[in-house]
Image (cartoon, rainbow, N blue to C red; front, side):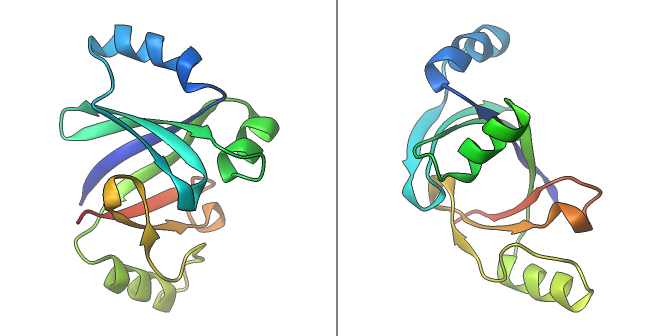
Length: 131
């Protein structure tokens, strides 16, 4: 297991991107809209992990609600797993509270699911199985 990425909620990619480009010395490695998540994502590869800047594409997006309630900042920590469906079954059997009981599509075509912060010391955890 490894840290796959850190998700950072921003009000505007255009406003946030320049600082991260200066810090990392390069433009985003990719950008995409993930319709299912209602976000625009700018991804910066940083070693074996990456930073993902997340901008809401609609007012009812989880990122929109997060920014309205807490402001911009770290939204979630993502961990790479080899078998997402199996990991979800094991966590559920162990009594871990899940947001997603089944994998769904995430950025880059990966399968993702979220662990509820109530079961993770207040941290939203995303589990990622890359395609």
